[in-house]
Image 1: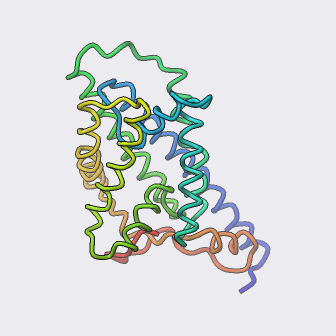
Image 2 (image 1 turned 120 degrees about the vertical axis):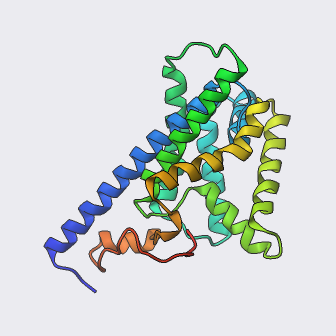
Image 3 (image 1 turned 90 degrees about the horizontal axis):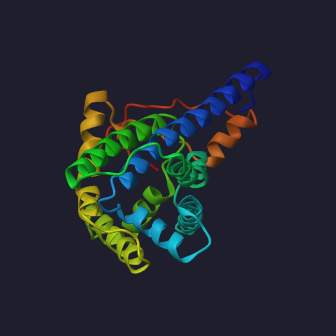
Length: 242
């Protein structure tokens, strides 16, 4: 359904503001990832892979993570998973934001394992806050989340948690074989990041399952003035994030 010029302009402006919101959320999220790296007690599986690739290629960590995210995005498309502009922005920006924080790093060396654990836990808080900002724009999740959902769809008899563990194990093995840092922080990241995220979301009163995400085609139609803007959030308990 065609829109009037005024309505089209309003909806386009809203989409652009959502893109800026996504970028802001990724900026906060990237700071959290930087803290987990800066803790210097071992990295989460995907970050371990990024560091491993950086050790064996001309790419720095940020470029390695961006290249990895783009490849995963292509796999998501092959798996016919729902892709949004948020997914694309995530793939292109997050790794480079983390690299910028790494380059500007103002923090002193971590003096102890316990201090490193504290820094890593604080990193999880910023990651959760960044994802909260990012997901409220309702333009789909990042490439890695879409990959997990896609694999889960093709392994219907395997619990999604088990699929996630298998995926992380494969990624961690690849990162470790390439020389990526593995340590107690790897274990804490695997089991602690989700717990901290749930705590933060509970304090914020936020449930990501209530969000109605919009894919690239739906948002593109809004930009072209062919349909109305869908609400960013909708109370649909149990709806899959896609």
